[in-house]
Length: 366
Ligand SMILES: Cc1ncc(COP(=O)(O)O)c(C=O)c1O
Image 1 (cartoon, protein in one colour):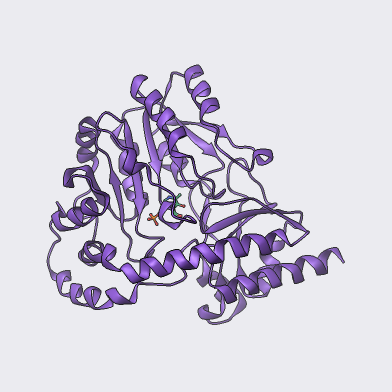
Image 2 (cartoon, helix red, strand yellow; image 1 turned 60 degrees about the horizontal axis):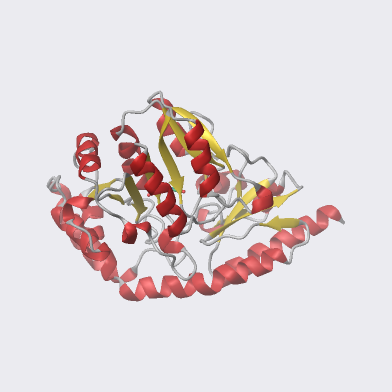
């Protein structure tokens, strides 16, 4: 696993697994990273190859064309858009933009938030999600927690949340945002997976108002399968937040190739449609198949991964022996070794995942 300093780890460590098993990397089926299985959009290869000519020049640090492409796509102004080296970098910059002592994150959630807050001395509080409630985030209860803790001035939420896959409805987000606007709190809303939701759920970008104390974070990484190229962006309409974020922006953080990719990504219409077709069929099919495995409890999800629970604490290791990599969730605050996350992949791979899980778990209990 890829371990970071505070012991969070991430999926996608297929290299290590391939070495461990002494097999070629292509033989490892990676269900641990939630990346579009359609792979890089082939229509954009030419554009990408042409962009290699750019490597001898600095990108324009204002990224005007990239910002225009993103702004046009979301019907916002160019100066509402900020870009970075993956969603992680823009997230980190928004976290540093606001001077705060205390922040609120979900438990469980993506571990990088806590790492970003902690390393600049911001104390992290948790809003505990509950398994009985399928890890749904109840905004009225969260607002009560915020009222009782005036010291918490930043709230960082993911919708869909990783690893639970649940989204927060726009009307609930509006309640939270109104509370933030009236009580001097900042909401950082991570929508890294919103474009990978079944029947593509609406982004809160469509609801944003200039007075909203909100940064919305988006990733090109997951949808366009470019974790190695990396591109993320942030949208806010709030002038004060824009000024604060400008101060934190790293210069030339998007490389020349990712810059050109981003200028063209929304033109890959066929790829975008095929991605939605894949997700809208494969996600519910995998959910149903996982529900059919009596030894596990799978939780509902709106996006391209599922969290499930199993009494077998060595399931990851056993699946690796079958060359399948799944994500054990032992490092998530609020979860433990009995929780696992799997990505939705293509039909054959999904069938193989379910078959192997049944085989491994059936053998154990039998
Ligand atoms: C919820 C969430 N936000 C952001 C990221 C980081 O995305 P990127 O690779 O674009 O930095 C991840 C990566 O797994 C994630 O799960």
